[in-house]
Image (tube, rainbow, N blue to C red):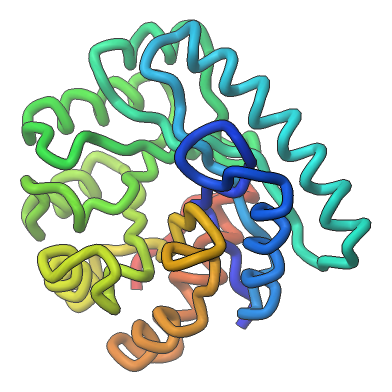
Length: 243
């Protein structure tokens, strides 16, 4: 399986992810060792249009530098630009100003919410993004207090894409996230699983173990869809499908 990881924090010094170029290269090495052939650099966005714009510039420069460093180290991995947009009251301004980066320039925008955000705000924000012509990729809904199968079905009906953290299935993000991620997978409500890696230590880019757990839970065909086919579709600006 040739894995594409659509959610990672591998650009150094922008957010709470990688803290140095050396750490970024170690993260890429771990990813390569676990069969990752492509990774999207999705640093956290700023909370307002001005800071979001500066972070956009930093991500694009960082991707360019990291590609060059990876080549010099002989790491065979494609690195794509992206951003994890935090939806708040500035969302509409950020969309109007264009201070965001979609997954590899596609129409798919990785979007996260406060873990205790209201269902009403999430619904309203998703509709705002959709009305702008973009498609939200909802990051790690298993970590949100209001996420239920019914909520995910509503978001899917709107046209959103669902991304869980692969490590949630193995308990990396706590028991609640584990239970929800397993339930969402069993209900066929998930398009993509990704690392959401922030370092080369515990929360890293090594994805083989959670991928194996998901394969055991859902079968090889679904695992391939979540880790390979659907991520490949997203970076190619194509709609992913559910299992």
